[in-house]
Every structure is written in structure tokens, then in C-alpha cells.
Length: 368
Image (tube, rainbow, N blue to C red; front, top):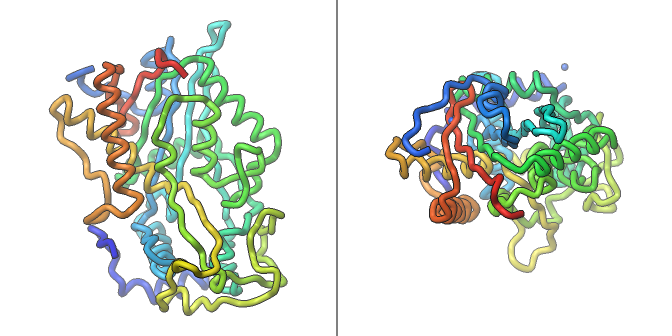
């Protein structure tokens, strides 16, 4: 089991659980930092360039994915931490921003992120007995965040020091492809569907991270690390439930992999038991998830490699005492990609958004 550097006091858990349930039921070389405050100021600093930015916010408290039970408990702790300390996200979040130079010389700018689950559907599903099947549910209260909502979360994340970001200087055509994808996604009404089973690349809907990943993929940026943003687990069928009634603002999509028969999974087992992921040979369903914590760590690893190169102090890239089986490959791949960029003398620099530095990689002359 991974140890967390800054765990919450477990004594908060019981009383906060009651409160939660009750509420549910009611910034090359040695160049100095550019003095930017918002992401739009960063765009204005180089008006002839096209940019794509990805913002990452970790969960308020570390989510322990080593088992479903630990995940359930730490998710609850994270929800408590968000309420107590006004952190930017309880389960983690990702957003994008872009500034494209158009053929006529004008600029196309925007910022957004997929969000949803505004009605505590996840907790409702657990209390109703859906168990791990909640990961196969889609919440139909989703929407694309406005630039104002993006800016608000950036300010909260920067103040709480729970925010990292990565910038790409790209070809105008790549930036335009991202903007076109966001427009098509919005016009298709996909944003109302917030969840894991839906595919943003098919304009079905998505989660915050799957949407951000889809936007990067659609842009055609030569970025090889997004596959390391994924976590993958085997969900035991015995811990997947089904009920005749769905929580409000929730739907089952045809591709949802849930039991055909109604059966309940105990919430008590999830919170206080020791439920594990499926063992070898056990009937299971594969669950893949773009983890915002891995986005957050990835951007810090990349920035740290550049900081080391120019003699600046590095940041703490992880919130645990050791790396798990998904964190370590991400770190190694991040370090290797930065070595490759440096060998190719790819332009790198640091930028600042709300006093939070991040790496900007110039891929505008890199073949697609």
C-alpha cells in the first residue's frame, strides 16, 4: 500500500461521512519567468503563435487505487478535504485552453473542460447498491465549462497549490483542429453525458480527462505521453450491482457493462471492508480511466526536467512516498521524452499562470 505524505486525519471520516450523506439527501535557457497572470496574458505575450494548454488539478486528497475499498474511503476523504479547504476538485479535473492564429490574421481563442455529476449521483449509486457498476453509469447533468469557469478553477487551484499545466506551441492547423473538435462536441450535445462508458472521440460525451485527452488527440500534437495517463483495473463481477431504479440525473447507455439481473452490493463492504480488484481467473470487467493525478504528475515531471537543465529548484512531483505501477512508467516516459526534446534542441521555456509555473514546448516545427 502506498503511503501518502499528507493524509487527512482519519478521525474526520465518521462525522464527515454523516455530513456528506446528509447533504446528499438535501510557468530559453536561463530566461526569467514571464510575468503572466492569466492564460490569456500568456497568449498575448506571443500573438503570432498558436497555443494549446492543458490544465490539471489533482484530487483534494490522494485517491488510493490499490483496492476498491481504499478508493472509496479516500474518495470520501477527498470530498471532505474539498469542503474544508476549498480545493479545486474532489476527484481531480482537467481543462484545456487554446489560441489559434487564423489564416486571415485573426485569433480564435477558448477554454473549457467537461464536467458534471452536480447531484451527488456517485454516492447515491453506492448507497442504492450499484457497487462498482457506478463506474459504468453516465450522469446526464454534464456541461462544458465556460472560460469564466475555467479561470475561476485556475485561481482556486493556484491558491491551493493544487494545479499544474503544460503548454504546446503548435501549428495553426493543429490548434484549429482542437477548436473544431470542441465545437463539434458542443453542437452534438455530447457534453450532457458525463461518465466513463461514453467516448468523446465519437461525440458521445466523456469525463473531464477523457475529453481533454480527446482534444489533444484530435489536434494531432506529436505528444507520446498521453497513453501513460491511463489507469486500468479489473472490476470483479461480484462487486458490480444493479437496481431497477437509477439515481436522479443518471442513465444506462447501451455499452454499459453491468449485470443483467438486479442485485445489491453493500456500501458497508466498500467503506469498511477490504474489497480487492479481481484476482487472476476471477470473472471481471476491465475498467480504464484517464487519471487527473497522472496528468498533474506528468506536467510536473516535464517541468522538473527543464528546471534541472537550467539550474532551478524542482517541484515535488508526487504526493506519495513511492511510485505505483502507473506512476513509475509515467515518470520514466516523461524523463525520456524530455531527453529526446533536449537532444533535438526543441525550444523549451517556462511560463506562469497565476503564480504557477509550467513548461511550454514548441512543437510548431515538429512533423506530425
